[in-house]
Amino acid sequence: MENTLPMAKSVDEIVEKELHRFWLAPGERLIIGCPPAHGHVGLVLDGELTLPYSASRETPAVTGKTRWPLPASDVLEGDWTDDPTIAYWVVARTADQTAVRLADHLAGGKGEARLTLSDRRLAVVYPARLLEGEDPARPFRTFEEMPSGVVRSVSALYLGRSFPPRPVLQFVFADGSTIHQRDMLAVTKADRARSRR
Image 1 (cartoon, rainbow, N blue to C red):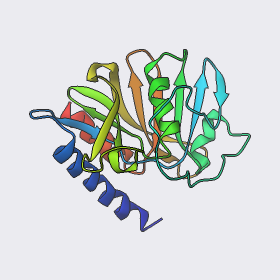
Image 2 (image 1 turned 30 degrees about the vertical axis):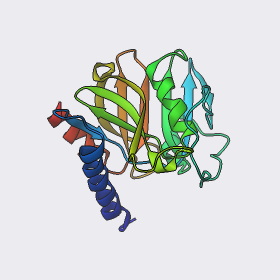
Image 3 (image 1 turned 90 degrees about the horizontal axis):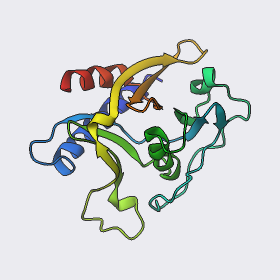
Image 4 (image 1 turned 45 degrees about the vertical axis):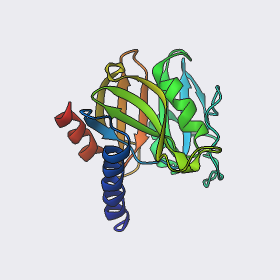
């Protein structure tokens, strides 16, 4: 555990630098860039849990294989962070809500799809080198791009029944749907996002 925090900080610095250099348009400001989160997606759609969730729509073909085992079969909403194979927890009323559209990429992206928010847009960003048939000279490819106003808030929570509880980033969308992403730097990133808005 003691070596994971410096590694997370290093990854955060790399993500920030790469997005500033290769993804942002001139004059665009980064609000938050999430790192890859390697794990499954749990989706609670209209009160019904699907775990692991599989994309319901076609998403970009990512090279490689998933590297994590299946989650426990009896995971409850209150303790999903206690299962290390789950990276995201998504809650929505209907399948057309923002969180579900993004969850398709998070579930189909083999841990490489990343939520990215600027002052202009919310998008799922993939490293182009990991997409089948993509030009590796282009560092990133963007999908599900939508106006940044679809994001109501980004905050940090501590969830789970273990002690200590796990830090999680929470994205709340204007349509009421939410995505929670496991992230040990959640508090730092949520504070940074708030200061940049």
